[in-house]
Image (cartoon, rainbow, N blue to C red; front, side, top):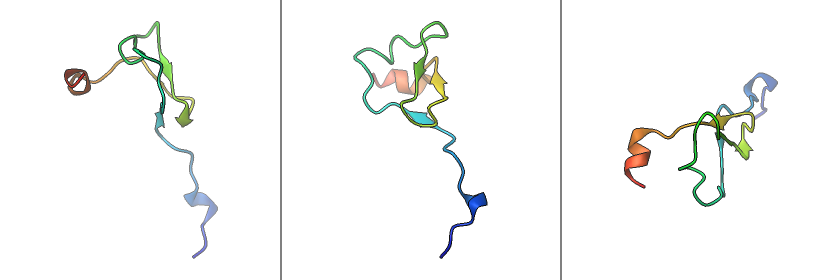
Length: 55
């Protein structure tokens, strides 16, 4: 099977494999966390409420 160039797209999402301690708690527009893998142009500025509830 051949891959068509149109099928190759950059990732939509970014992620952080090894955030520094407390990085997710410091998230804010004034303290964003940049993705280190995937789409590294993405930044996080807040956590979703369900993720926060589990921490």
